Length: 417
Image 1 (cartoon, rainbow, N blue to C red):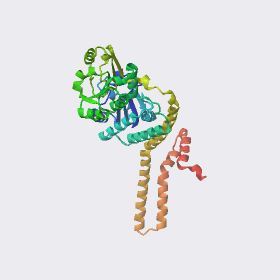
Image 2: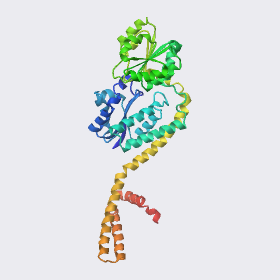
Image 3: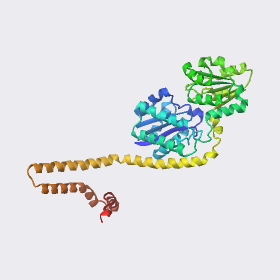
């Protein structure tokens, strides 16, 4: 079995491709069981965020396994192939370390991905698809991420998606304190955005969510009003800023709904940020006048501010990661030798037990203990050395020198001279 990571991310695939291979929480366990059950895969974990969908697994058929991502989402393999990366062995290990440390994120050094990786591990554990290899990989991954964040300034001066959305709103309206803000969703990203916007003291905050209880918990923190998603058509026009991030598989705000809201607003501009993948706002909304619509990919330039000041931290982080990749691969390679070492020990144990039982029987018959012990030791020595001696004696000329060198190394014969 070979360690493999495969998938797509914000660097290899545009948003309209990424949103086609998202794994919602309620299908994650089914997806893991499908991968394990129908492909030559022994272990698996899936990381699915707005910026990436990645599968970490152990498999003996890497190419065939990578096609599963397209198959599961009912896509043609050729549709996904231009955006797909396959990372075997140490490349998979390094990738996992870089992802967890925030080096592979749209926001360099952002801490959210570490929590998302931990959620992926929990899902795999619950589904029963996390074995010894992936357990060891992710435990080391979390250790490396902690070391990178505690030993470098990788997270310093970073601009989060939430902060970028706030900055964009200020560029458009000048002063957010005069605007009414609508948040759609009640998850972690919306909570972060609400924290940033509330610090600017907007005129009014509304939280819309499918479940009103979840919306109320968030609204209580920010002195906000709550509405259900069913009320959006009537309420949308009363808000100047809309930030949405839900797990809905289909758009929540269609072009028609936004167009009616703009007419009601008498064409006063409305600023919209769609942080969801798949998107919550129909693509066609960007065609409307007086609408400023941004997606996660549109915020890329803003979130890279402060990158220059962190280049030294990036170099430090990469050095920490490279060192830990070497250590992990040493562990992995040693695990690959376990079957051979076990077989060697089993053979030796078989010889030992056979000769011991023979000696015990001879002792029970009243034989000379010294002669019996001498015979036991000679028999064990002969059995242990018979096979390597036979191989050396019958080795072809072109193999003999290599075998002699290996025997010298295995038995450290040079130390006996």
